[in-house]
Length: 128
Image (cartoon, rainbow, N blue to C red; front, side, top):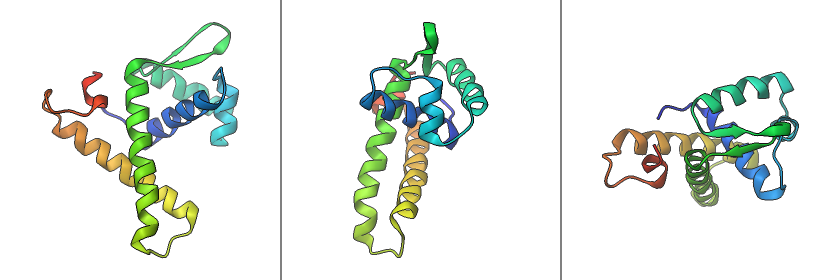
């Protein structure tokens, strides 16, 4: 399964919003990511093609099982890295450390996907 950091940003946004609100819609995603509605619409089409989300009646957006597992795995990696980066005593501000954690988590997820042999895979690999 191929993904970009932009795919991960949108999946993580949907995952995060869904944990706080009952319904996720394109407006809440645009607000969360501070992007235009047109950008959200384009990316939602891509995520639907990849079968990571479904868009229901009245514009409600849900993660598929595969999308949920990918977002959850990425979120866990990010949170773990966000906790460990300050321990490294690197000269990063909080926002910079969050971006670094995001980039590192994306690399880790890509490596896991590439190394996945079908038996000893993380949950996000098995969802394919």
